[in-house]
Length: 290
Length: 179
Image (cartoon, rainbow over all chains, first blue to last red; front, side):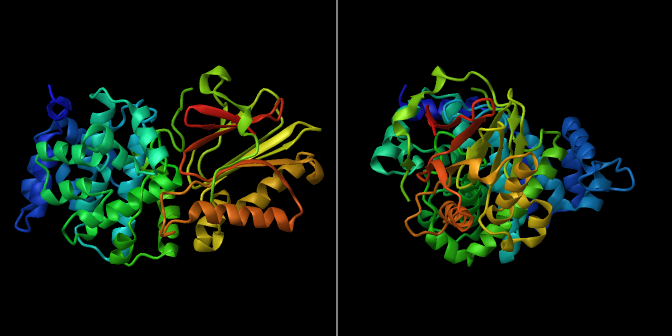
């Protein structure tokens, strides 16, 4: 089996996401969508319905009256917020896995992904981007390719690390040199298989190389900046550390100043704790084994 | 900024040393002080953040802080709620905590780790470097010397402080360095 065949096989081995997530993403991209349609999509999946209602009634949303139905949850929290809960619930278990190759303990990829998603949301609000929920989803899923490389492929991570350290290459360049593909390319393949909208796939595909995306997409730029910010903050750097190259062009396309970035960083950390509570995770640090 | 190792020779393979897990975990934008000899204080995933350990060997009291950003003025409200997030608001507080426990300024041994950088030729994210500059400035103004540091590069680091001995260890990649 060639390596690219091995990658395709690994992508197929990843657990599928609930149909509700992909259907809802597509429905939200269509301005003609009827809210009743979305409520129906969620109601067909009892597990998802239960988890959305549990979260909608949590202290995080501070609801005074109990929310007993998806229809009411959509009315109270809004479609965008419900979509975010659907996406996070759908990939929660997948992202919680440990990634020993990348030196990430259980839960750390999840923390990094959620932090990047929240940072993207704040950055999007700063620059007045519409369609925040698509950017949020792309940021949440941006490192899904690491799951394939770390869990399903027989990869010599020390060789990748050596290329990065000795040649001054970024980690994803080193992945391409050693493996023939990087985690962004593989992640995009996974999302393509999950039938997610192309704009989300593009956000994942180009999150380390926004300048070569060939499309003027603020969403790609924001996911790139948010990822760099979170790694820099120490949320989710594993073996790859901070071996990534931030794009000056992406920053200037979005018109982001250093002060804005630092302010978003401090907001993101606060929101992380609230979000962890929502999903009943331990606050702050996960347990790092020796 | 380059990796500065005062004690690069004191490296040992990662698994050859402590199997102990730190029992006091200092999260991002947090700090801890203790005088219990059985404590091992640890902070994980120092990227561009600054980790500082302080230890008074005479009374065996120590502390650790994990600051994320250099200056509190970027978000005064947050600095009020979470002063340890910033180097300029957090560092004086941990000194004060240790003084209250009996530590003396002239005995405190100060060591630091972190302040990594992305591969950032254009200096877009200089958070690590700026954290380090503010840290040095505060110590310099207060006539305090740094006894050991493991700063810069693009690595993620874990920092330990053993209260019984005052030993400070930085874990980076697959090695442990004694500062």
